[in-house]
Image (cartoon, rainbow, N blue to C red):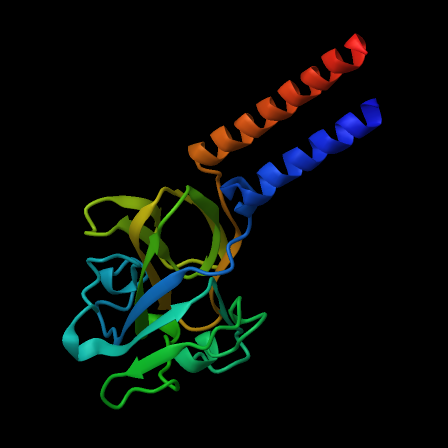
Length: 238
């Protein structure tokens, strides 16, 4: 009797999980990004690690119409990488799909400006040139957290760039920076400076369950407990 009772209760709990948003929490397979890129030479005195031209910030002077070289839209978590033995071009950086490129394999749509192309060099040594990418994205539900591995700098701001939420803007070797964002629209800035290697990769990205999902899950467990209690009282009365 009790085996059957617990089997039924287990089935009810599984059903609650299956139809609850809680069951959908975990690694995200896709986030929509709107990408804008600027690329320019940074002659002296701007060719230093501390120059504003080398910072992943919305105040970077590189963000002018004459330096705009690419716009685009794409869906998926970036996993971009160019090794020091590969040409440090935008095409090599974002063009590979699968392990490198967009994690879910969605084809990207890039619109190059003027004479620019995928062969545009992201940056050169001695801070002689740099690229700044602005990636705007919206999180519709839940808190989202994870790690961004980047070489060089990144920062994350709110939609109107009045509040900086993640600050690791200066050029660096590959490091991991954690983030935890609530629902909303954000701007991610990434700067590539001082030559390859280049990297921008999202790791271990998950969504926290919404309060409503936890409430639904709790209600399901309570229902299971009441069901078990009722079956026990019925078995005792027989």
